[in-house]
Length: 113
Length: 114
Image 1 (tube, helix red, strand yellow):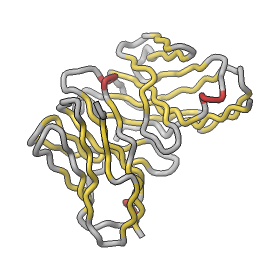
Image 2 (tube, helix red, strand yellow; image 1 turned 180 degrees about the vertical axis):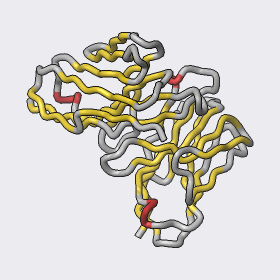
Image 3 (tube, chains in turn purple, green; image 1 turned 90 degrees about the horizontal axis):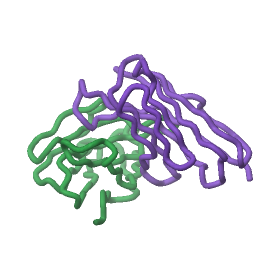
Image 4 (cartoon, chains in turn green, blue; image 1 turned 90 degrees about the vertical axis):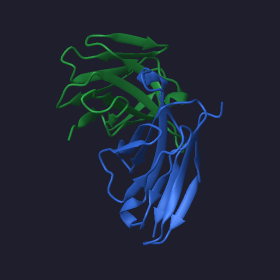
């Protein structure tokens, strides 16, 4: 089946630093999404991308839908302690049913104050 | 709106026992789905439903049954629990024909099978 490769697996950074993580796929997706998950909670959507090449920002977060439709990246600028958590990329494939998502394995972010 | 609610929050079962994980949403969303999350893994789709009376299998459906008799509820049944089903289970919903950024996840049910 389809797989998403998300990297890095984990990051340990200093408060104020910028963060970059990415996802690559063996197949094309129509939509790319980035979620954040806090311990004991469900994923919360951060950014949704709908078109190849699209660059979207949400506060300090910026994400891009790769032009090949097989990759996406998420940047976090000027990290703060509350950015700690696990970040997941997910792709939606209209070849399946709308709303069915394929998830990456996540990037665990730790921020040192 | 309460959003997507899941019960119970925690559950411990013995191998071979059966149980139902409950999921309800009050947003009149047509699409509902169940995912499982294992340590160090992303979420994997178990079953989904695009409306009352319609269900289909996701990536990892074996060992689970679902039904959708109402728009609001989408229970997940484990007929004979196995240790491999130890996981965190998330329910999600969004309006059919809507955009994916309207999808909401519940808080999860943490299941341990001994």
